[in-house]
Amino acid sequence: GAVVSQHPSWVICKSGTSVKIECRSLDFQATTMFWYRQFPKQSLMLMATSNEGSKATYEQGVEKDKFLINHASLTLSTLTVTSAHPEDSSFYICSARDSGGARQGTDTQYFGPGTRLTVL
Amino acid sequence: RKEVEQDPGPFNVPEGATVAFNCTYSNSASQSFFWYRQDCRKEPKLLMSVYSSGNEDGRFTAQLNRASQYISLLIRDSKLSDSATYLCVVEYGQNFVFGPGTRLSVLP
Image (cartoon, rainbow over all chains, first blue to last red; front, top):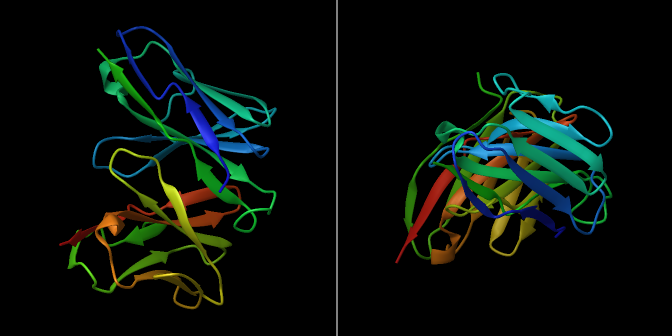
């Protein structure tokens, strides 16, 4: 299947610092990428939909000023957790939408390996 | 009613058993359907898309029933490595909506 990478895979930071996570589609172009958060033993929670060249669409309850999303190119979206606090510690997963139809039919979603964030 | 519902399980089955999961969805305009599996502390991985005619991939069979708005996943001859959480995903326009997942444990 298609490959989506995330960087970093894990990060530990102090409370109050900002953390930037990158999500890249390596072998296809993704006009739409998604950012999820998953707490232990819980379901994936969609945070926002990132559209290339336009503003992200945030889900209800997700602070857009705290979770800054930039989708500057067809292969890269970034999520910046600003002024991170311990309650932001979670597993952040991005996914990219492959609309090319080359694999598994059209409009399939492929996930990055995730970034485990721990805020001390 | 939630948009996508699944029995959270856990389903504990012996190796070699056949196990089936159902997933119901609320929006009749849904266009595409998928099953993903997620291992503990890992990202979800696409298992298979679900087509109207049903589809089979080895030991895995997926079915779609649009009239009753549910999809199913059947796993035959289950292996220890099948232990995971199985996520039902339904596409509505721009969005993919995930079910809460069904946890499967295959026991030796």
